[in-house]
Image (tube, rainbow, N blue to C red; front, side, top):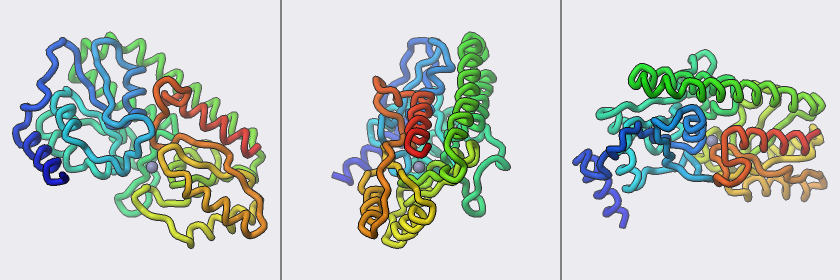
Length: 301
Ligand SMILES: [Zn+2]
């Protein structure tokens, strides 16, 4: 079965353009890798553009592999927008291949390297959407690139784009104000994986993840013990599960703390690397941010 899928992808890529022919509707077709990127673009671009997303609600981008159907979508789109910084770690090759034939833009290319959080030499934290001000720079980079290549369509979107930038700025200010409601020594955010580093830096929280920066890495008993000790040391009341990571990981920390006489509960579910389904509050980038902040503040305040 695996061989058939690999062969299908190979054929689709080799005979580039044979799958999903371009739609001749006069619109610019933008394909985003994640739902978060698709949402910020849908909110910034007018009907001259059609924005679609490869990954659906709740999908983990670290683990996502392009299917044969995705290859068709990638080939029929006019522009591909991805996060970069190895968030889409299993799509690196296919994005590189597609980039030889069409415009492929990384949101992270709009952010100066000095503003990125460094993990090791030449490796940066990819979860840039959790600093709203920083992510706005990524959106500006996408808009300016579109403006160079499609000036008429970008110009007709300008009002919508500027209104959305203002909303992002308002959310940035609101988030800062809400997090300040948590007493300083209780501003510790414990989650399933290290997705909230930028959030912590921008809004003043210490952030600790059970897994590393990517969900590809497994966690072990040492990680559970490390977090359990921290929870007891700071009398942390709540820890958080993530929508795109199995909840058993953070539950095992809770059980470990409780088994050794401590007390901690699950403060709720945070949306880290993927949006909720479209009809839900966290089905948009702004809705996801608001939902997370409300969950964090009500559990730690
Ligand atoms: Zn992540």
